[in-house]
Length: 411
Ligand code: SAJ
Image (cartoon, rainbow, N blue to C red; front, side, top):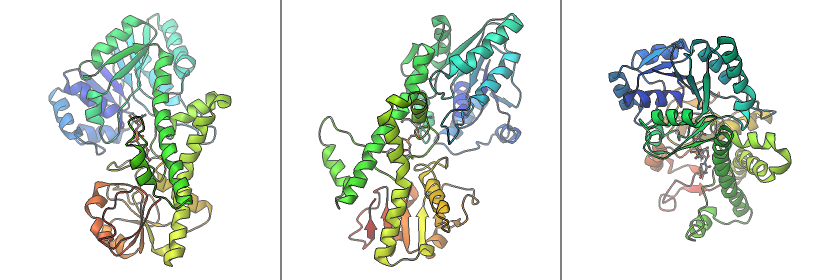
């Protein structure tokens, strides 16, 4: 029996996938409302393919509860919050779940931590808890770190086809965990030590942050010199060894904008590049704000007639954590400015910002300048509705603007 602890964006798809592939799974979450929703067979968030996966897992009798169960395999997928000022992670959720699991665990049980942690966390904050429990209970427990590696928006597919890393202290334990992951993972599963597993996970997200920062810096350079950054990138990417990413209004989500700080925090003297990349990406919402004020001035538009399209941190998801739009609104608040109007078709909570619209038509009626912050399919499919608007397209998705007479500005 596998007990998956923490049924959020990562834990729920993981539990469902394990269940769907014939494992006995119990999913545990401290949030009683979430458990109630799951017991009714409802998925608490949108994700491609998750409903079908849920059905398959239910056919295999997956269970949900607020309790930890007595078993020999726990998979911990609780969040790792971080302090916004010190950038240090707060391992307390992981510590608490490991402690509770150890209170129930059978002798020789394996505890797999999937949550992303800053390198060194397992040795420093989790291992001592396990050793203490072993001593107290006279049992043996095993710790494994198998960082999750799935892209929100494509989780079900990536769970199955992405390669995985299993970090362990003991090769035989790693092999056992690998066998479990092999029930659903069709790609390579690499066994390594715990510190290498921790570091490689953080490095993956840092790599992406640095590459996005390069694209964003190019956008700022191109704007300074009145050049089209997208055309420059399109041409440069024809080179066989060049693959520049897309500039945008910033980097959001709970991964790429967070993990690089772990390295900066731990190695402050030797992470100049990583820190600079973070700074560039964090500067993008302010850059967009500056672009808005330039265009308002040029087109003689009042701030009350400016609307931001998109609140989520990326296209076609409903997750708003650390989103560039929220960062931009935060900048506005710091300057004591009234918040701009906002609309997002993916977001069902209408209390996120003050001037948030539920209805796209009403939003359009009330704005003259639309700033496309997120490349949702919805706006790609409805772009003719922007015809009589001035548009700042931070995502480079509005097409044929000349024919349709858009007054279009880029980043
Ligand atoms: N972005 C750009 N330009 C680009 C690509 C992305 O501005 O060319 C922005 C997005 O709009 C978004 C942010 O970057 O705001 C991050 O989006 P993303 O889709 O690149 O990644 P995440 O944060 O959703 O998920 C990442 C993934 N990591 C990598 O691709 C290395 C995922 O595989 C990880 O599992 C996840 O972080 C995690 O949990 O760590």
